[in-house]
Length: 140
Image (tube, rainbow, N blue to C red; front, side, top):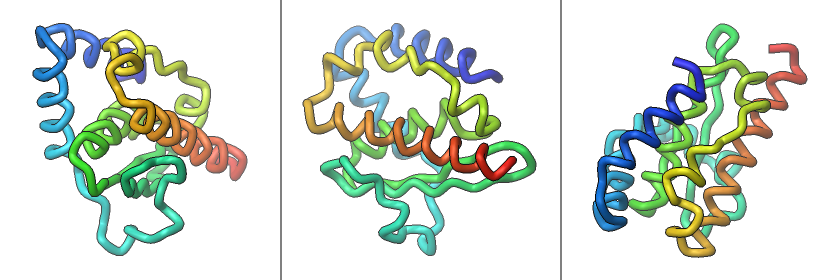
């Protein structure tokens, strides 16, 4: 699936839920399903700066695709990072760097997150795109 197809699927998934309590429950459930980062990669260098909670994000190139594993010490934040991993993991660094993440606004996350969580989400997006640009610069 392309990044946009995954975003469209998430928009459809979120449209199914009537209110934000149900949507938060869904985000928490996604966090529980997140493939966990290897404990060895829970190092300071993989912590996302700008998140109130601790969020580890580990990038790894397999072939020409960039994959992410992640974890967080907070359930909502873990769900948010799982959304980002679901959308961006498994694509080329070029695709990740150049994609527009329209699903965040369309599912209503922007207006339903606290300012600190919204900043953390932006920090996740920024870090994932920076990793993509770094791997792209290396010629991957």
